[in-house]
Image 1 (cartoon, one colour):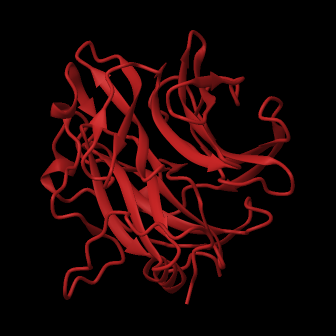
Image 2: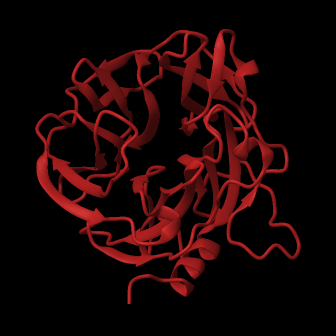
Length: 316
């Protein structure tokens, strides 16, 4: 049986798998959990990140306002389902990820610059005072996701180089830094392989450390005659050399199906950005943007997803 290497967090959201349900990831029956009604002047609230904080949870949320500008705000919750969002903008940009490293909370996001998107990096201890560090990449890059611990004494960041538009291509790479200031030692990780992800792929939530390696949820994009379709896949990366892919599922784990995923500002989008885990039970709660409009929630266990990846493994 696979094991999550990390703390026990007993109060993460959870619903049992529906009887007879054949797939490894299942949706929360009360989705979506966050809509534009959660914050005044929001057009949409979607790709967002959450972490355990204090006796509850904190998060950074993507809010596209009614001018359709991209902003990030902070939110708090006791149960990680019902959220109170602050209307104060902490940064401009979109698609945040969060992780804790050595007692500090690190935020990465798609930072907006005059020359194109970079990966912004900021750090906080209380979600009120933020220190913005140097951008981790040159333009143009998206999907910057930090590993939740140093590997070989270095910070490690997953990225997807791209272009200024909605990139019709994209592979995942790794870059490393000793000080969160100077980055290098780039390594290729993986590229689109299957039809469901053939246009581009990008890292999703903070990688989850397990005894099998790093469990990585990611998004893959299909281009059809009706545009892009975003779905969620999974892979397992080597624990010490995370640019090495040990196992990778050949099919998606979650794809647009429900109305809130297929209808919205951008139809047909499942975009995972955060995951909460409980090492004691192996439970995983995955937060994803639905149709670029709302935040939704799905569940799995480390056993379910690792078994599925190995049973449908692209790596021979």
